[in-house]
Image (tube, rainbow, N blue to C red; front, side):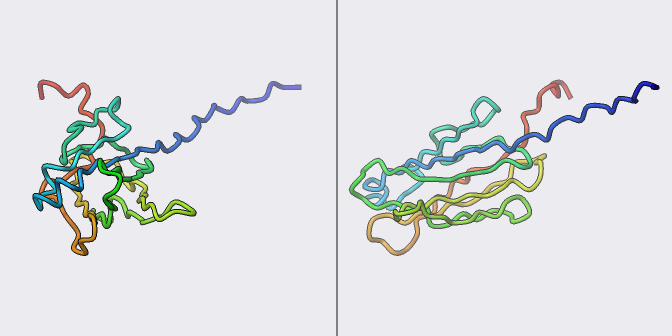
Length: 155
C-alpha cells in the first residue's frame, strides 16, 4: 500500500482574549466638584500586552481583532450609586452592549473588537452618579490601541 500524503497541520484558531476595563470612580468627590476627570481611574487586564495610562481617565488598552471587551465600574464609596451609563465608540471598531448581572442591578458592558487597529481609537464613557439624572462624562478620553510597535524603532 502506498504511503499516504500527510496533510499539513493547520494552526488552531487563536482564541479571543477577554480584556476587562474597570472604571474606579470616587462618586462623592465627583459630585462635590462636578468633575469626573479628577475622580476617575481606569485599569485593564492587558498591561502585559502594552496597555498604558493605568490609573488615569486616558487609559490606552492594547487590543486585537476578536478580543472580547468587558467594561465595569467600582465605586470608591459603596453607599453612593455609580453606574456606567453609555459607551460611545466608532461602530466599525466595536459595538458595546449594556448587560446586567443576573439577579442584580449591576450593569456591565461587552463588545468584540471587529478589526485590528493601526492607530488608537478614542471612546467616550458616561456615568450616572448618586441621584443626579444627568450623566457625567469626563473630557479625557480612553482609547483602544493596536499591538505595540515592536521592532519598528528607528524608522
